[in-house]
Structure formats: structure tokens, C-alpha cells
Length: 110
Length: 112
Image (tube, rainbow over all chains, first blue to last red; front, side, top):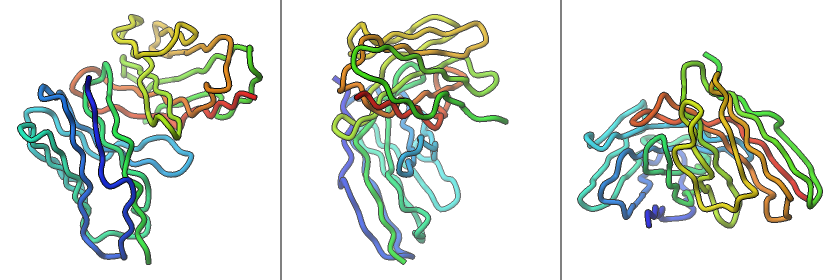
């Protein structure tokens, strides 16, 4: 059974800090790994997609890496801002089905 | 380019009733997926359609059903509603396998 785990469940940091969010998965034959952001009561916003043949993707202050051998992905956020406060979810799979972690709730304090 | 739209945004129903939720994907996307999000279980996959065919189904009872139309719009139906069906129902669309999935704002269903 595919499982995705995100630790920690919650994280609080001061503004300006660089931080790393972790995601681990059990499916060694991973297809894609996608990171999302969810604001309270809202839908999911796609941040980065890493295909199985790739090792990392970057967008602005965000960098996501994928290590299939260890079953891990990390999302690096540089110079965090209060506007980055949200729940970050990782999910593995393709368009036919995504398996989600429970998310990490990030709070960036001014 | 318009994003994924879902209607209605909020819905209140009573136990035993049925409900139909609608999802319009991004133009050109042929894959539509549905997910249920609750505080306890998180995001769980319901089903996925591609070109009007259901390709994958999650572990939900038969009360949950869906369909996709020729214009890629999709509907999901829940019959005989239970209190535990209260959740945020999210729809996602993509071009297909190996492409990003884009989510709509969701439909908040409350069953009383």
C-alpha cells in the first residue's frame, strides 16, 4: 500500500529563515512527486512537480528534490515570509491517482 | 486561462439526501480526478476519469459515483448522505499522465 508521510506536522519559524519540509514515500516505483500549498478553507495550489526521471525542480524561492533510492523528497524555502504561512502537502503518483501526505502546517512569524 | 471551477462552493444537506457536485477542468485537460478532504483522514482519492472513462477508483462505498462528459466536465454524486460525508470535495484536472494536476477551490459539503 502506497503511503506518504510528512514530518513535522507543524513548524513555526521567524521571518527570513531558510527552511526544509520533508516528505517520505513507500512506493519505490514512484511516478511523479508534486508539492502543493493549501491556505485555510481553500483548494490546493501546485508549487512544483518532479517527474521520476528528475532529481529537482526550482521555482523562485522554492526548490524541491527527489531521492527515489531513499524514498524522500524535500521542499526548501529560502528567505521565508509571512505570506508563506500555509499547509504544504506532498503527493506521489500520476494523473490517475495521487497519494497525499497529511501535510506540514507552516507559520512564518513577522 | 481559466482555472478549474467547481460548483456549488458550499452545500448543506440532510442525512439520507443525495447530492451532485460539478467540476469544469482547465480547457484542453482530459483527465479529471476527485478527492475528499477531512480533518481526520486528510486527502483521499475518490476516482479519476479520462476521455469519459473511469481509469481508477479509490476505496469508497458505492454511494459515491461519478461521470465525465464529452467536453471533459465531470460530476460526482453521493447518494444516501451520511454525517461522515461532510468534507471538502476537491476536483483536479491535468493533460494526462506525467503532467501537473491543478485543483479547483472545492465544494464544502455539510451533512446535518
